[in-house]
Length: 49
Image 1 (cartoon, helix red, strand yellow):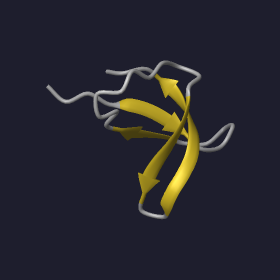
Image 2: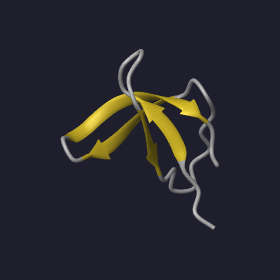
Image 3: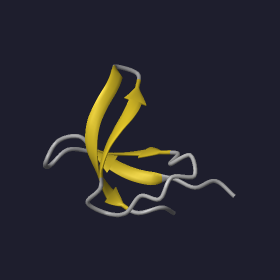
């Protein structure tokens, strides 16, 4: 089963989904993820699904 966490990069921006790679992330956690634009800083909005 695939697991994903929803991450938002701007306060009212679109939510993007990333594989947490087994790391424990919760809503409100700040994360750095690799995107098509390079490494970006965001906040987890929806926990692991």
